Image (cartoon, rainbow, N blue to C red; front, side):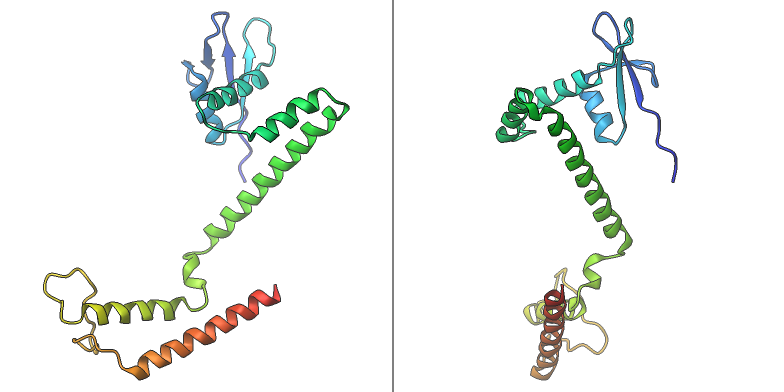
Length: 191
């Protein structure tokens, strides 16, 4: 794994303008929000005093989204946050929130890893091939005789050009689907 990048340093000038030290240009709060959504860590400091202003600006980004009607935080959460600042529980709330978001990030990354490791998640589903065959048979039956100018699947060698499906073939496919469904239900029960 590559080492994580150093936080993007943004300097706030006396004019309150924000300066991106990597690209040597001025940025807006929306630009900073975009950097964060892309996965970058951001550090905002006052040029003159050197004070870390990151928390202040991140809260401002959230407040601006809220003022535009984008409900970033539910009302109950906002109320609990305000309540926590007026009680003795204030030392527990930030730690709880940090731990909750860390669990959320870990869960999302594991989900993404699992999704990426599967070439086609649907292909591994029991009964998927039988379902595809059933769909093809249904389309053939529906499109039987409508070949002219259609964009549906063309008959393959050995297929009945009229699209007729024998009862025996349909029965075999249905039995296979039932078998695979029973297998899937058994696996779910074991979980």
